[in-house]
Figure (cartoon, rainbow, N blue to C red):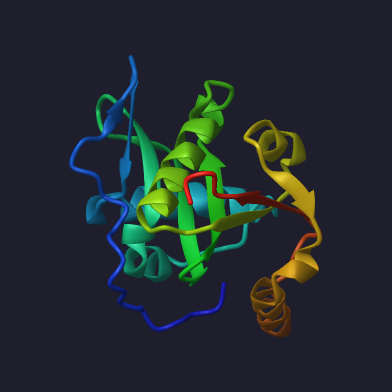
Length: 179
């Protein structure tokens, strides 16, 4: 993703006073201390072309937009970000799960955490650009044309101009049932 100046907004951060606890995992808003682990997870998946690369500085600047799933020791096992395009539209982005933690439902947990943040911010529509079609379909997202989101296309074009190869992916959207 191209570097953008950190933006300050009045919307509440993802951080929640009460993290969701499962038997072995915690879903919570990311903390400043999580930035390095999030960067490592995203970088690992970006190398494989599964997600767009994000610099450590980009992640740190947008840490309030990330949700993480940690083990009981606080190690980050999964993350996702809520990237706002407008007060009513946001992208579910950088959804990654550590290879050793895959298959445990952590991807669903982290996306549900991002959706909860969207609900608190009164965002009406979410979208995701992904290679994991079945995953997003299972979470109630419907396939749509990426052309619905010219802002995302503009970001892809900017990345391509910088030499970043963007892998073709499917686009999915979900209209908020909480509106």
